[in-house]
Length: 76
Image (cartoon, rainbow, N blue to C red; front, side, top):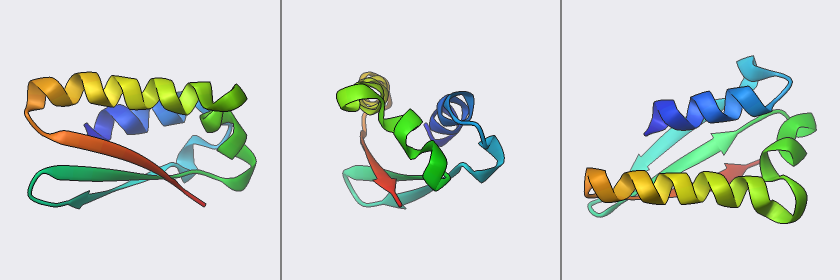
């Protein structure tokens, strides 16, 4: 799941080398913390948050198959 998020984020931003994803694992939920360059934050969020919500929808769809819940957080 982490690799999927990295690939998606790198394809959206101008500085793909600055994309970082950290996993915070608990018993039922895994939080994926996404960090990008300040100048690329708007590209990841999108208009009215549509892009980030689409990414969250993809993670929710994939998490059903994995049997675990994944959450996405954007970190400044």
